[in-house]
Image 1 (cartoon, rainbow, N blue to C red):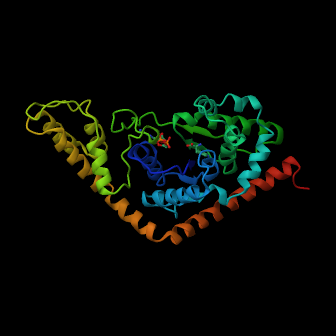
Image 2 (tube, protein in one colour; image 1 turned 180 degrees about the horizontal axis):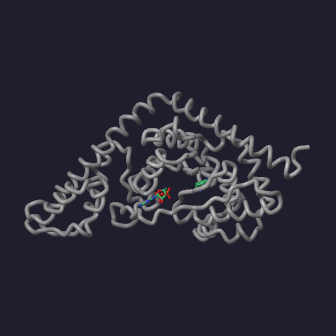
Length: 321
Ligand code: ADP
Ligand code: TRP
């Protein structure tokens, strides 16, 4: 199955991102053809500072390679290195009734939050449709907020195909209902917009400090504690196998240890879990040219596919003459 994932380069990755989407994407490399790209054109709608956007793009590339993207298996590139996507964006605009975009929740939510929208925010779903249709993607794994965008892409493909024949494959979204929402340090959904994240690649002091902030109840040391609703337990669970989990439950039930001890334990298991990824990240951080070479090779492969598709689109739409 051809799976396409667009990743916005929007800052430090947290363990909610990891367990909610990255880990699954990495695992899929074994069974599917994964196409993964860094959506830097999309990020322009929120990151106005050019220097920052370019830093964030390299940061995202470095992080994703460290976490297990394998360039031999997965086509991995930066969106702006394949310009064909912008051409298709324009072509698809002719197949996008204004109402599609006016009804987009993500756009409406941002406007409701007081953002003064530019055209780029309004037409964001058209560019996303171009990303998807250019590569004949079959499955698009997304969070709930992005479902409508994939549906819009599918509608555009249908409209285009009705007019010009079977040119675009119809994509479907995939939302993983099994993935539980990872809670943040305050118990609400972990999200960078809430300032409650535990970052994957923070330095050790910072991670210790963050873990210390995790909110718990005030059960004293000498009483047994309930692990079921405990935020520390909910996070530790992500890193533990069944027997370790049982052992931790026993520690909660047995008086004598406090939440401070469980926080130290969480820190240790998390620190160990990400050790190999951290080491790989340190390597790529010290070899940014290698990262650029990987991205360039990925873009070359993606461009070859994109060019082939665009030739057909141009000839169908009268742009080739
Ligand atoms: P944030 O809320 O921090 O801005 P994003 O919206 O950039 O995160 O999410 C990127 C991906 O990570 C999405 O696929 C989303 O479903 C997943 N994700 C983000 N936060 C969580 C969470 N707390 N639990 C599970 N998955 C999450
Ligand atoms: N809009 C997506 C997000 O915010 C990122 C994205 C851009 C994307 N183009 C895509 C996702 C194409 C899937 C397919 O998460």
